[in-house]
Length: 249
Image (cartoon, rainbow, N blue to C red; front, side, top):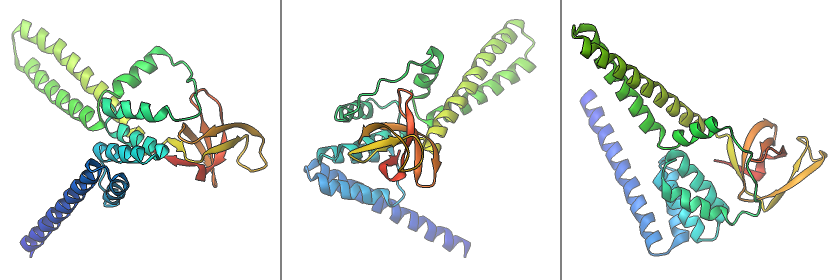
């Protein structure tokens, strides 16, 4: 019975994978044929099967952009960037789509080491950082073993200092992976999806109007209260708006 169950499970996984690949091929064919609305429908259908990848979000973003739905394109480019932060094509298309955003927000300057940390963190994906961390730690253990059992002074010095260096690589890679994982799981950023929305000083329609922002703008979600969300702009301004006016990345 156990063998039969495993065979059936393998067949189920294979059929599911085949169907997903067929749907991806179908969506790509629609895009190649410039049938962008059909491509959007096929990519969205694929997302509904719990498939998630940078390529899928990128292709969906391109399809939305081709249909003139720039805000939806930005949302999907941002999601693709989370999964593949170092991808230059994703970044280029995202910047192209952001040119359609009405609001030109000048971000606050960052301390150099915070900017340095973020730039390195975004060089590659969380999986790649995790692999680098694991491989580095294994190499460190091997060097530690050589250091413990060798009697040659020069070998001890070499394995000690190289081991320290590799251990630091492992620690930093682990932290970069953790930072990437936090971005993927916390969904602390969102995109404005209404043509324009007035940001309030408090989570209420009676709150004082502070400023107006427009669709496509990326904001940071700081807090929530009922159907209201507190958001922060890149320039430091913040306030409250209805949850229905944003879509989280």
